[in-house]
Image (tube, rainbow, N blue to C red; front, side):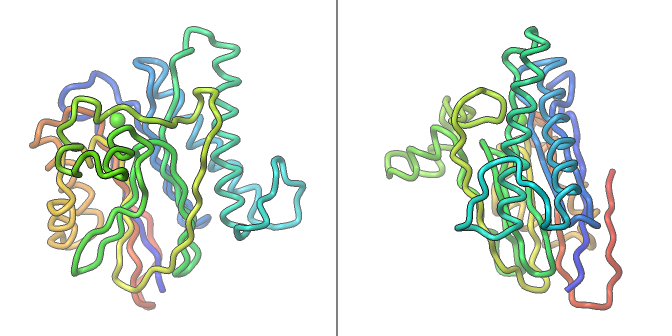
Length: 262
Ligand code: CA
């Protein structure tokens, strides 16, 4: 199995700055999308702290023999612990940054991050940044948003279609850096050849329907082109928020590993 990835971030058509950040590191098998909250000069700081801190911790923990900075969860594998600790440390890093920069008090960040090792994918998220799994037959969201509308959908109170249009659709119930307890779900899955894992901020999933995301990715001649086409579609649909997308492709052996970023 060969892994390759492409990612793109775009300010969109309405916002003045881009508060999203992304990280693609094929040598670590680490891919991250972070969506900063808190407005100009705060949101982008928060999402930058998140990608930096996660990248740093994951690169420091390639070898297993190190002192663990937080509680080690024996119920999940090593990569799950790496990802969980990386997210918790990035949460702490934002809180510490706010302590020395009180003007950034309202900042925070959502995140979706995955560690890829061959066909094994370990995935964690906070907030409404999402991961989808795509294959030639369809698309499936593999994260459940930490949002008010997602809770209503889970409880059968709203339909997914009502949730998409609901005035509270942007209300998230968890974010990194807001000082609250985090309920971090880490999941592990096995992917198959020709499947694609897509990570995105809500600037994509809020502007482009799941079926359209699938169709655009399926039609594109490369994942690089697919990231470009998805950003263009989100912009064409209004581009109301910053748009970030990473696509990770799993190919039969023979193609070279590569990371494409723009
Ligand atoms: Ca956003």
